[in-house]
Image 1 (cartoon, rainbow, N blue to C red):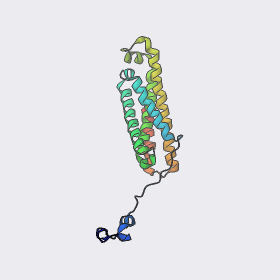
Image 2: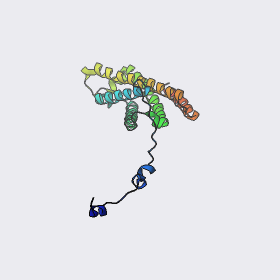
Image 3: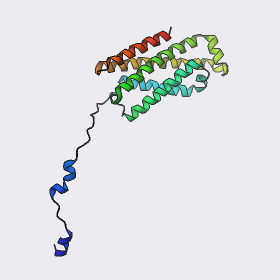
Image 4: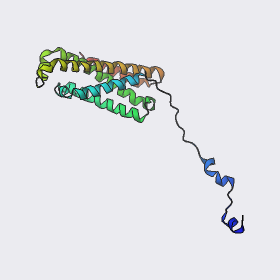
Amino acid sequence: MGDEEKKRVREVSFSELAGDLISYKPKVVRSKEKILDDDPYFRVIDAGHDLIMQKKKGKAIVDQLPKSLQSMILELEAIMKEITLSAMEDDFDYRTQMDRYYFHMMRINSLGLLMSFKMNRFLKDRTAVEKYLSGLDKNRFPEFLRELRQFVGIGEELSNATVLFMDHLERDYTMAPEVVQKRAEELARTRELMI
């Protein structure tokens, strides 16, 4: 190496070179457990997807239903969309926000039970069905009834899946006693509304 080249070269100590690496502290990341496909959480999401698709498919029928049934379906749809969006943001790991998911499941359970119960009662009242669906094609009446009965099944599936999910959380994780108490109160209130 010539004198001119030596002037352009600067010597660097190892500590100066590795300074950033020595002071670097990796971000602590919570290890994620894999959630299995048979987890009740996925049953809730699947049933919620069925509800959204059924509402979209039978929009004309849903728009003719009594306002109380319409509002239950709309609220369930909104919660299911929120849960699905949250699930994607959390990489389908509900343990990131257990309390939030637990409270959503309480509300879904209550609405699923009520929707199923009220829809079933509505379908048994032939005059009410004819009154509310009078603006639709009479020839397709049996098809409309089948589509409405699917809401009953979806409500029952949502209720069953959320109960499994909440039981799973209570069994495998420490849930605050007031949260479990709130679940019992919500269930009692729902049962009163079903009388």
